[in-house]
Amino acid sequence: MPLEPLTMNAADDVDKEFLYTLNFGPQHPATHTTLRLILTLSGETVVKAVPDIGFLHSGFEKLGEDLDFNQYVTIVDRMNYISPIANEIAWHHVVEKLLDIRLTPRCTYLRTIFAELARISDHLLNVGAAALDLGAFTAFLYGFYQRERIYDIYETASGQRFHPSFTRVGGLMSDVNDAFVAKVREFVKEFPKTHADIRKLLNKNRIFVDRCKDVGLLTKEEAINFSCSGPIARASGVVRDLRKDEPYLGYNDFDFQVICAKEGDCYARYLVRMEEMNESLKIIQQAIENLPSGPVNVDLEGKCVIPDKSATYRSIEGLIQHFELFMTNRRWQTPVNELYGATETANGELGFYIVADGSGRAYRARTRPPSFIHFAVFPHLIEGHQISDIVAVLGSLNIIAAELDR
Amino acid sequence: MSHEATLGKLTDRFGPEAICTAEFRDNLRVTVEDDLSFLILQFLKESCGFDMLADLTAVDYLHYPEAKDRYGVVYCLTNTATGERIVVKTMLNDPDPALPTCVPLWRGADWMEREVYDMYGIEFTGHPDLRRILMPDEYTSFPLRKDYPLRGRGERHNFPFITRAES
Image 1 (cartoon, each protein chain N blue to C red):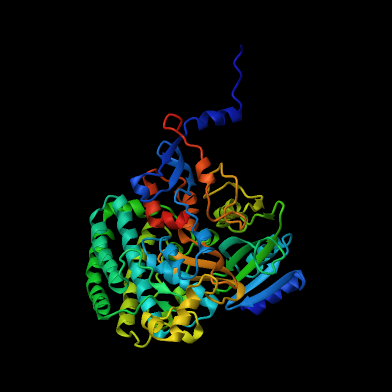
Image 2 (cartoon, helix red, strand yellow):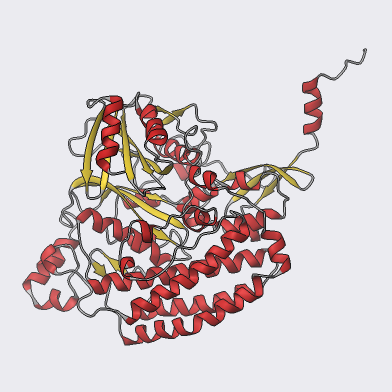
């Protein structure tokens, strides 16, 4: 049989034979959680990356349609489990917007403190884990020590260190005590030293900088087009922070800056997170020193807040109120309407789209998960880079699988 | 630009009967016909500065009080320069609920449309890669529809098991 000359297409096919497929995850130490990448490689260069997600999907949004506004807080807790209390604050922020509840000054300040503590603990883990993947172990341990102190503060306030489930519609589970204030003050005093240590370990660390600079570039236009938010968008020059743009809680009262960078690479994202911790600390300091006195929950007249136990047991109004909120056929009176609301969490814009049908639970509780949206950018960021850059880019995106899959 | 300015531009371009507006708290929501939805989204992006698709989701209105249509697809748009937000909603019905994709406008819509397809079975025509994203590929139903039960046995028990030799 005579040999046929290769056509152009056949030549392409021959080229393709040099590409090979590598399965990365779902159980891989550098993914930190269960996510899977199907990589097409040419030598060590990534030609194409196809993420495969859903391993941790557990139907949170379906549960949100069954549980009431206070019960669902235990589920949103478990979305971004690196900064659980920020999710609770985001969820109840939107619920309170739906029910048109104005929080008491003490509650807004306390929630602000918790939201910023959550931001610090999230950034600490992210910075530490990103450095850990690139071979710098110490920063991770320093970060974890301070994270443990934040957990201790949560525990002092709520009795639970990891998933506090601390917010309630119209307020908090309970007021804080002096021990809480003392612990926050101590944290504010001690944290700058750890922050400086981490900065000294990483900022000019040649291995870390070389592996992060110019890796995973995201331009400003792309960041907006890909719906990015939070530190990832700000590291690409998008000047947008919901704490400033749509002030909620107590953010209008505090002096802090929005941290941005222009480069849009992994190193810029690291730097933005590092500086944001300083700004968060400034907010915590201002909030704890100016913590208003007064009640932590809105008053019972609004019929939306759980009365405290002494009112439930000793007054008929308290008992009725308690009964109204806990009987499955009573609960809250919601308007028949729908709305979108969002807060700025450590990872970006955490939004909820709530459709209310007049009953005490959400007809639809959509989460806008920042991890999900940021992971969609990953294939674009990694193409053309080396296989070892995958961990650098993944680390800089801060993908939390529980929030990714919900 | 304020809500009124955006609404003015929309009604100038598409006529007052094409859009139905509602305001609730700080949300401005416009409900549009499904055949106009892509044009309106494109107009909002190119002429009104809504350069970011903050969120894309769907709602199943099966048991909703006084609902006429079955599904609503919700686009939450943000103008990153001014911080203005608008919610665009399109109603769809069985059989074959479908909408044109908005991936050409916002690349961020890619996974969000896949999630809506996965959870509600709403097709986005022209989407580059419309596959299930959270549920397994061999899954046959759409879990966030209201006629899908919250509790029960069945689907998990029928998942095919793969032995180590087959994998």
